[in-house]
Length: 224
Image (cartoon, rainbow, N blue to C red; front, side, top):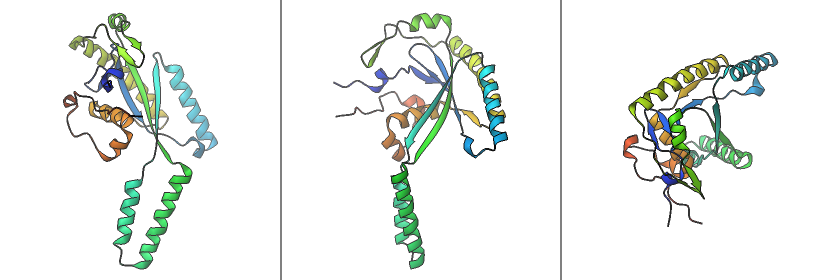
């Protein structure tokens, strides 16, 4: 007997661009770009460290920094180059494409090329939901719930007010470091978790329905 992905993940709902956990915590997810620190001059590095120190020292609330790393899959790109190579009537051009294709393939194989995504998570939870959330407990790999958090309009609006204020503060500090930050919407949050738990499928298939239409488990059980 297999357990559905929804019963394992600590996610109750994704609503109004916020992720809501089974413990009643509202999470706002910000995606940021990266800066190559090693390519900066010494003066720029000092300025970057100072800006980061200012960000950390200015925080009056907790944040979570998440880095999602995946090995780069360029199989489709290599297939495209191979087909493009075959269609070229010019032999010199075919040879150049062949050399480039082999170079890229070897670079990925030997270098284990990775790509990373960077996220900052802001959270909010009201006092009354903290007590209710404490009723959640983990049994093995399954999250067991005695009571479900009710997401009322008032609770949702309070979460938005709190998290939007935090978002503007964090985004403003990040902009001083030259880091672009953008909040993920509901669809992007669903796609993020889909890509995390379905890495192979997400490269080939994309979600086409509305967020509200995904009511069944979208993660298949892994068989060993």
